[in-house]
Amino acid sequence: MATKPVLDYLETEITEFCNLNCRGCCDFSNLATEKKFYELEEFTKDFRRMAELFSHIEKIRLMGGEPLLNPRLKEYVHTTREIFPTADLRIVSNGLLIPKLDDESLKIIKENNCKFDISNYPPTRKMFPQIKERLNAFGIEYDLSFPMNYFFRNILEHPSEDPAPAFRNCIFNHCHMLNHGTLSPCSYAQLTVRLNEAFGLDYPTTDCLDIYSDITGEEIIRRFNNPHEFCKCCGRGIIPFRWEGGVKRDRADKYDWLIKDSFLNTTVAPVVQSILKTPAKKLRAKIQKE
Image (tube, rainbow, N blue to C red):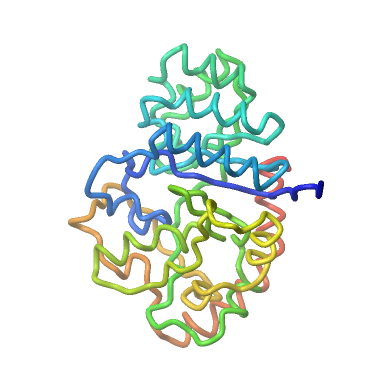
C-alpha cells in the first residue's frame, strides 16, 4: 500500500461571523448576513475524509470569523485532536472572548494540547492582561502576533493574464483551507464568493477541490504547489491601510479589498513585497515558534 502524503498546513473556518468586523477582513467575515457555523457533524465528516487523503497534517488552525463565538468550540478541538493526534493545533482568535470562556472549554483546550494564536488588534492590546491571566490559569500556551495596526488590500480590480508572478511573490501561499467538503489553496479562493455576493462581482471560485471526488492527496499537493486561477486576481504587492473595526456589511465598500490600478499599486508595491517576502516569512515563523 502506498504511503499517504503529509499536508503542511490546513485552516478551517468554524464560525463565519465576527465580533470585531474589521474593514477589509481577509475572510470577508464583516460581510456576513447570517450567524453561520461549520456544523460539527459536517466538520467531523470532512476531517475524517482528510485523514483518508493525508497521513498527517503538520499545522491545523481553527479560525473564523471569531471561532470563540461557536458554542461547541471544545468539541471541535477534541474532534480535531482525535483525528490528527500529532498536529500543531491552534485556535486563531482576536482573544477578546477568552476571559469569558467557561472553565470546561479551557480544560478541553489544554487537555488536547491546543494553543492560541492571538491576533494583536488594538482592542486586544487593551484587554491582554485579562486574556493572559485567564490562559495562564489553565496552563494554555499562546502566541501573540505583532501589532496589527494595518490591514492590506490584495485583490486586483482588474485580474492579470498570468497567475505565476503573484504566486511567486505571495507571502501567504500554502494557506490551504477546508470548507464544507471542499479544499482550496488559500482562503481567498474559497471565501471570495462573499465579496462577489455583496458587490455583484465575479471573482473565480474554481480552485476549490471536492474532497469526496476521486482526487488523491498527491494530486492535491501537486496542484497547490503550482499557480492557480485565483492568483490572477491577487496583487504581487499588498497595499496597507489603517486598521478599523466595526465595519459591517452596510458600511463596507469593495475598495476595502480591491487594489486600484496605479503606478504605486501595480509597479512599486510588487518590488517592495519581493524584497520583504523572505524576512516577513522568517518573522512569522519566529512568532509562531516553528
